[in-house]
Image (tube, rainbow, N blue to C red; front, side, top):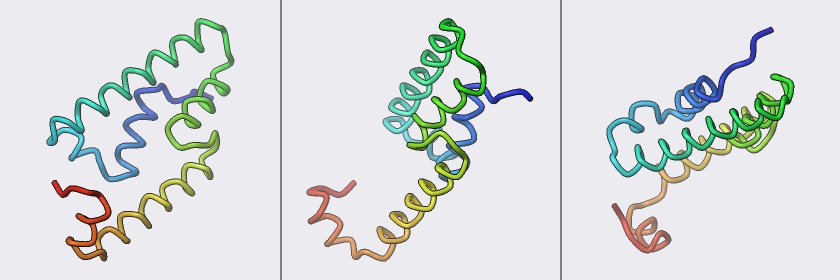
Length: 104
């Protein structure tokens, strides 16, 4: 069984959270997420250099991205992200501005 690379996990994550297009359009978002992607790739190299088994490397990388090592953890986190998006979409703009202290 082949295990996904950090870059493949990253692409999967962007697609799953619906940010794959925004990632490329918004410069600040792009810079921050590029930094996170590069960090994830460096961590992968370090773990491989330490001779960790590929399945363990994948679990660690998934934990960094999703907050848990398994695909079910990923699904739970994505559900939470979607719930937050839905709530934000239903929240009136003035209330969001008040809560965030600013509005883009």
